[in-house]
Length: 288
Image 1 (cartoon, helix red, strand yellow):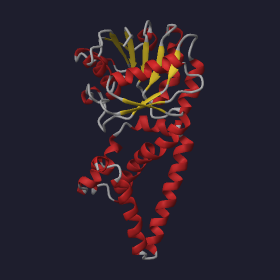
Image 2 (cartoon, one colour):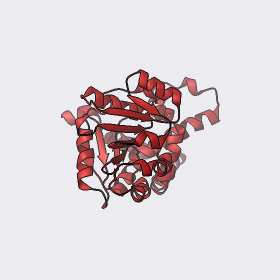
Image 3 (cartoon, one colour):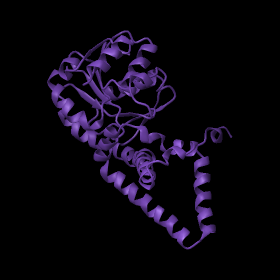
Image 4 (tube, helix red, strand yellow):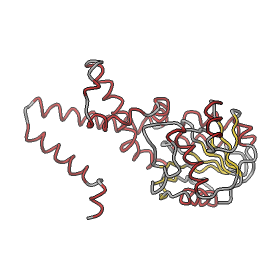
């Protein structure tokens, strides 16, 4: 890895794990953490996650070879506007957001001459956030989707792909619009549904949630994710998420109709179809 200075904007679970992953694989350059919470940054420095910190974005990116945007996607535009005049020629800006097309449309035109943006989305995370949940192996074996646009510099693209592979990720190139449609279904929908499911239960009776067993905990674990982060994702991927939510709503209406008509055979067929599809992504299925 040819980077000497890396700036990470957003020192939480993903940003901290990225720094730890680099250091675990011998990165000997300087990592600067940038964020709004001075206490969090101080702790990250004391824990050896980062080498320096600042709450001033423009100061933190100065002389950086790589800038990683690991804050909520809703802050990206303001951050780049704040730092763009401090980005040096030859620097690469990349991100870890789970929305790509809208982010790329906004950020690419903001890059100064000689600075390249490459969109990225590591498929890794936990329901817990913050530096205490960060690990050096978070990305090991995980997929990382890289979403080049027609304007993406090939050398910068190859550098970002190589960087993620060097810290153990399995990279995959994908069109930004295709990415957003896929992840509206497999990631954004489940998160929205998890939030809605918890709210439905507490609206039935605010005191019954604790009666849920492991099944409920498994289904709603992702509702522990930061609300601000998922608000921003819904803003940036609004149309794709709305389309998927309408499909989900239509399917729920079908389930309601089957129950209203006491069509238990039809209901069982729907459950069996889902069960079979779900089995296909169990780890042991790939070993057969």
